[in-house]
Length: 234
Image (cartoon, rainbow, N blue to C red; front, side, top):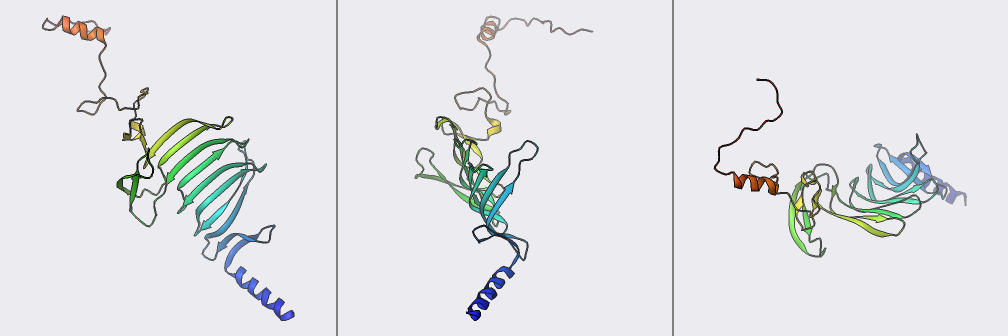
């Protein structure tokens, strides 16, 4: 019996000896492990207190070589789930969900991470109306960040219904007619989702009011009349 106990203690000491730091959970599991290289490994639980008006939270998930991997869940300090995120290579990748502090679904996001070991990656592009249909493959440069890719849904948390949907392809927004464009280039105040017309200089062409068109037609060929512009001086 003493021999078995000594062997158990020896195995335990050897297993703990490979970690620079660790925590024993209330269930007796070894969590929050840091290896001898200073890298976080395995299951982790994080506790953050309320600070300067910001709500605290608890978070749990898995680390692989100091990078978040797989599903991470975040809870309020009252135990309500407020986020469920999917990670790969330490970056958001896949579907993530966010909830209100009352538990209502607030938002669903879709992300795409690229292997940090690769400078470039080939990303399959699927039809947004038919996710099983492959329509293209795009080579993208690895910028070291996650990219919005797929469908984002925004919910009314009290009713549980979708109130807004956005679609992205590799961080570029997809308009209502299926056109892919940079979000910064989206025309302001245009509800059709189509690009504004542009001239050869790249500037947006503005349509002239009908009154001006009628005036130009009526006075075409006539000598131009100098108009006062309100300026002063010689």
